[in-house]
Image (tube, rainbow, N blue to C red; front, side, top):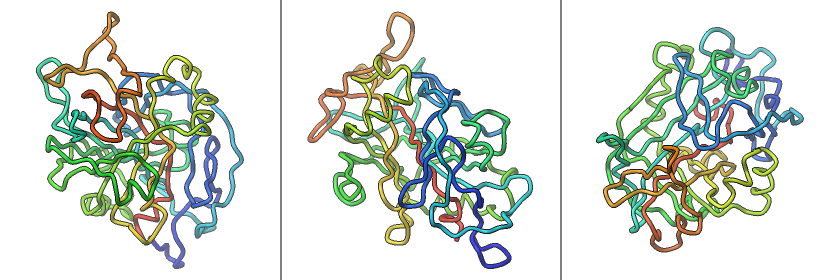
Length: 303
């Protein structure tokens, strides 16, 4: 979105501390101490979130990613600088189709995908609740969706992908009435966007990054897959249309009815990643949850 001087709204200081700039203009999260290995993300009343992976704080050099900047960034309550896929969860059948969801205590939990809008300060804090500004929009669906192998999935070197269907509902929106007026059409943009999440085998370099960032990595290594996200609206216009890797997913065991199985401590039982990854049909049904650590300048959406 152009500012008064015709430039794009974006923080002039580059990536927040704790994020590394990528070659294509995004910022990659390199660590936070606000998350737990297999817990469930929750959005606070302030719109901030806690994650699902235990990591330790780390600092990387900040710098210009090469995108347009302004020396006078937009200011005021509700200003956002970054956008990204914060978290997701979906159930996959042996056919590789996703949906309609998992069952817990007689309640259906549908496929969900949450988009985070945040300012520079919130990301730099490592998603600390109440620090800076952040809000989320969560889309949910109980519609069966087919697996995607080609298109953005193959182009982005993912193994399989899923797109939230057009009839998805808004399960949660903490941005309404809080986000800055310059970004007031966020919902129109998101509802007109193909939101996708993908899975892939972790490369040796990705595993090395996760091992360095996650103290619990040795305990979850055999269960963890790579994940990423996609914004289809922007195909051919920006790097946002690519498959943004740099995330993780864990497949959890479910019974024939789609109920997540719990261990003796009452925690979801993860499956070995060899049993939760195609090609072809999935060997077993599984409920996947995870998050992606890549964030893009928000002006890519509001241009």
